[in-house]
Image 1: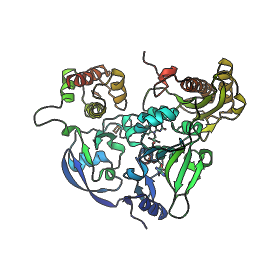
Image 2 (image 1 turned 120 degrees about the vertical axis):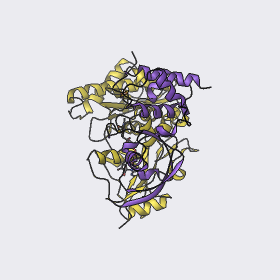
Image 3 (image 1 turned 90 degrees about the horizontal axis):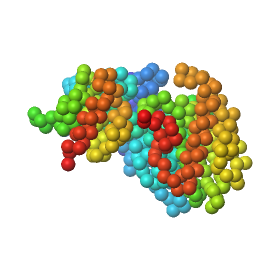
Image 4 (image 1 turned 45 degrees about the horizontal axis):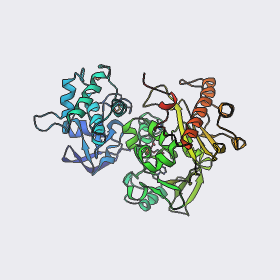
Length: 157
Length: 304
Ligand SMILES: Cc1cc2nc3c(=O)[nH]c(=O)nc-3n(C[C@H](O)[C@H](O)[C@H](O)COP(=O)(O)OP(=O)(O)OC[C@H]3O[C@@H](n4cnc5c(N)ncnc54)[C@H](O)[C@@H]3O)c2cc1C
Ligand code: FES
Ligand code: FES
């Protein structure tokens, strides 16, 4: 089914007119059409979380979500977090606590953490673990990521 | 022929699209993931029902004490909504085990029920809570089905293609009752139940059994209601009773063997899950607060 559908999606506050196959996934829309490659393709099978973005503020695995279902909605990607040259506090904490090694999981981790802190501003370690439970990391062993998210939460007032 | 994609603006519009041959998509966590894995191509015509929150997205507390849950309610809401946690605790336990926060955000109860996987995590809970499913179509009156009238096998139901699940009803709970759902899992998230069990119990003032029901996950082509529990009325919830319930569950299970577990392992562990689920349900019936999901509290996947 290759019928092209036209709709509008707001990505990081900017409206995009989209023309895409009905079955296009949100990840390919973001990377190939909008041109934002911060969102990563890991497993491409809804398992690893590298493709995590926010749709209307809530976490979504973009590899396995139909792009057309975001028509008229707000999508936030990793590129949407920093304000001008200033990193988002979660991004800064990931650097400060060595939560980043190869970096491939990092955008997804940060988007999941962002979704968690929106609803649970002062999470316990257990809540952080659950919040990040849909994100795999091959490098860090996770502890430095947990430390980073914990400290980002503590730093916020 | 209908358009290949329709974003329904109302239930009536969705029903008209189903009548013309479209298939519904809610969150797509089964449909899209399955299609991408090559299980079945996406249907030629899709009708998206994910924006029908006004009509399908609420949980209501009815005057007769029953709960109505709209088919679009997601797992995140099920596990945290006080009405569900208090009165349908097993359902909250099940929803809290599903996938990851993103899966629980996108996935809906209607999708879970209509996808009809024997490993679904809301199914055993809904079964012991006596849930009924409300189906609506453009062509006839609403149908209200018991779960055992709905599910016929892995991925198959008696719902007609033109029928939309609009929600589920859970009857009022008796006093001094409790419920729980547990699953055996090899990891703590992004997992499919190896086996699972839900229990619901109501107790007399002196803590004897009034009613018990048990249902099992991933040990038969559909969620399996355990038979023979009516005979347990009047008994105390002691080791004997728990042993007997574990034995009933293991005897009635008809599991398959696959990569994840042998037939024998599933048959044994589903009894263990049934015993622990009943223990947790009985504790809750006596007012003991056990957090959701109760898995960790009953020794599965505890942090070291
Ligand atoms: C990574 C991952 C982990 C998962 N983990 C679990 C888990 O631990 N436990 C578990 O039980 N499930 C799990 N699932 C499966 C899935 O998330 C759930 O079954 C979810 O509830 C499906 O809801 P949905 O809205 O996404 O369904 P969809 O994919 O939109 O629909 C599923 C099916 O139901 C039909 N349908 C949907 N809504 C209706 C309706 N209202 N009326 C009639 N038909 C309808 C669709 O046509 C389709 O056939 C997981 C999935 C993923 C991707
Ligand atoms: S790329 Fe989407 S979950 Fe792995
Ligand atoms: S830093 Fe390499 S995968 Fe996480």
